[in-house]
Length: 535
Image (tube, rainbow, N blue to C red; front, side):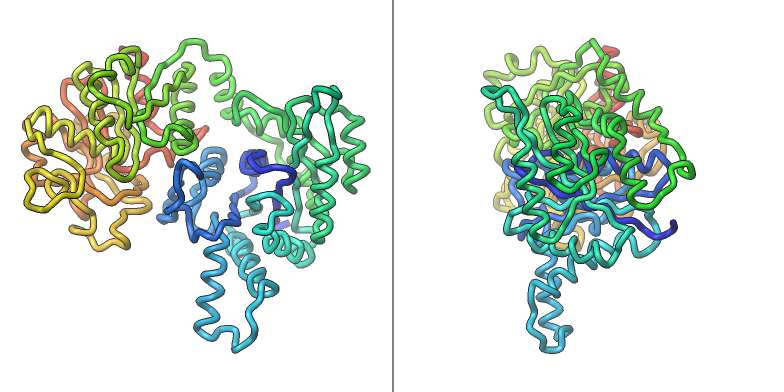
């Protein structure tokens, strides 16, 4: 049984059913049995990556260790499995077509007519199998984005059909559908699921396992009905019922025996497979669900209308509060509307303040206003990315009295403008597109709060930004009480700042939220919550 197994997760009836959570949950259960697992997301959109997608529409852009800008589902994969993802874990239609067109231009196809089948489908299959080709994983779980029946998804479903024949018993197909409840009829309706499976079958794909997304428990009779009409064994028809937290889903799917059925269908003898070990996960879920005391945190950002824009940050806060036996009460505050007139009303009752990353000048003044309030009232505060840069700007304005300090692009002769306090990365490093993307080293000064938190002189964190702290003002800022406690040795770039004589006031240039997982929550978030509950 040493050959990599491939599991495909498709969705039907409607989008946003939680394919990513189901894929991550199955991965977690298999990992908990001792298998090596990775998850992959295939996105039907024509963008080459997620870097240019509007956070208001698509949610956050997740960054992998190798600097790939990916779909937010990769965040779920990492939080559940604790396994770092890379560029190969997220493939878009844009990237597939770009690769095929590049090959055609080079003459790789020797003058043949380039078509969806076989050239596009071959490229999709190559990307799917690349994760399992090196023998690093026992299972590759690939989530197909979109909904069965979408025009955009057709090449992916066709690729799955072909792979099913090529891989044989080393492949498995899971189909997730929605079972609506009609209150007037007082019953659950399976017809949408039947049509969804029929559409999949018309494209040559027969699911092995059906997972029914539902708000109500689905009884044995309904499961048998679905099994009969969809050519699926009754024990392979499962439910995924609504739960208060996504972290309960792996435990529910274990009760449904998803991992057992999948392993049996892939030819495993369960008597030879280690049992599931989920002790740490269960402990976390217990803490999460049983915490009584609340922690009130203001998340100040410009994309708060869609909380998914800050998905990894919010999940990191949930994890940290749970491990501190607290319940998170999160207040999403639009930085555009924050000013000196309403700051007291908005933030006075907050236990902690987190100022978010972002791009562009909109909402920056509101972030600066929030940071001044946090600093002057000694409220524990964490600034991430642009949040850290705004910390430097606020301190320069209100402590060093550099009233023109800003992060807006202005003429280079303007005093204390972006060229001074924050200037473009491309001016000091030759990096693609002026962006610092992916994992970078950071050295931490002994005796600082950052060193106490990390308990290490050197760390690696992921980045996604264009602007950097200007060392021209480093000495003046430090004399006034700011500590530049973390820096990149190679480029001498400031990565972490903190304030003396404050309970907890730290800004980081990188994105710690990308590394926070259920089993290993990030120490920065843990320390942030600890500071709040001990005040």
